Length: 245
Ligand code: APR
Image 1 (cartoon, rainbow, N blue to C red):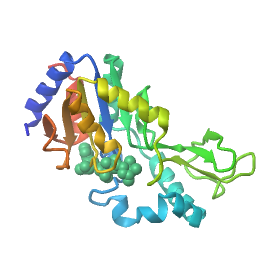
Image 2: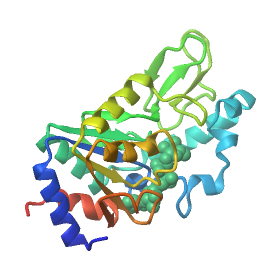
Image 3: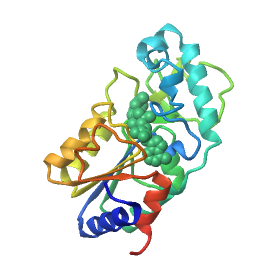
């Protein structure tokens, strides 16, 4: 594990030599925007049981309760702003056309920071999907007037996110796998890397010969595997990657 300056210099060097870069983010990159993570101190799964809220069974059992929880998350996220980590990744994308951003986050902060090509492998909190006709629409209102919301067809809407036990959006996931398979450098930022299949992208990158850098404030199950474990917060580390050497 390297100190900040040395780590930044090494990663900048690896980035300048790479023909392609993939970035994988998790809840940790939004933590400094005030959005709770899932498993760290104060994490959502420390307060709520995922199986009571973020599963198809929970939604079928009590759609109103599930929607109350997601409506609360929308309200919290609506007050959050992209932080220096999100903004640095958007700048990196502008400078480096071979960069693919893959996120597990559903908060939309990468888009609001200016990232254009965001592969949202766990869906998008601001998208609603009809459970009857499957149509999807974006609704950016922080709190919805009626819960559960309904579709124009009269069907009940659900959040456009991936719940435990559900498949990932196929096209988006395939694009993420293709990008990781072909990348020369993978930056893994703010994820505990314990949820699959996304957690397997680190091994996939390494088996394809890529260098892997982890930026995290704590150790994770992949820390021992990566080429560089940079123990730093996203808002400290990422801006150093867009500074000139
Ligand atoms: N900078 C960098 N990393 C941070 C920061 C920070 N400021 N704050 C926290 N972290 C790290 C934590 O150390 C932890 O490793 O971010 C990670 C957050 O882990 P989780 O809360 O498990 O979030 P994530 O990895 O995104 O969870 C994956 O699980 O519940 C599902 O669908 C949900 O997409 C989510 C998936």
